Image 1 (cartoon, rainbow, N blue to C red):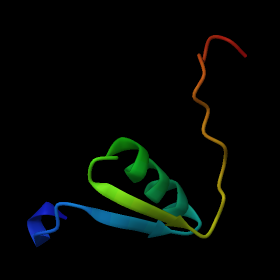
Image 2 (tube, helix red, strand yellow):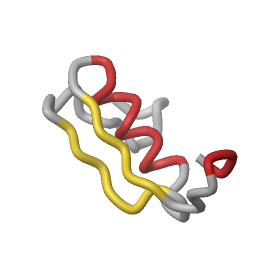
Image 3 (cartoon, rainbow, N blue to C red):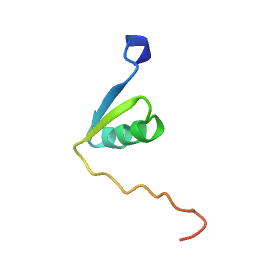
Image 4 (spheres, helix red, strand yellow):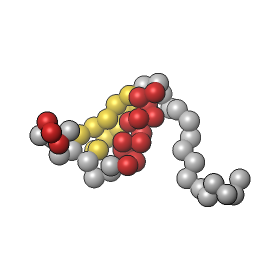
Length: 52
């Protein structure tokens, strides 16, 4: 979005785009101001992968 002249933007998506928009918001919180998802998707595991 920087190329288009927008230093900050929002992300929206459904189905596969739901996962993409979620990760855009998580990976770039300084540039993505809002995320709108029409599909809840799968939960994001944030724990230690060695402990299950």
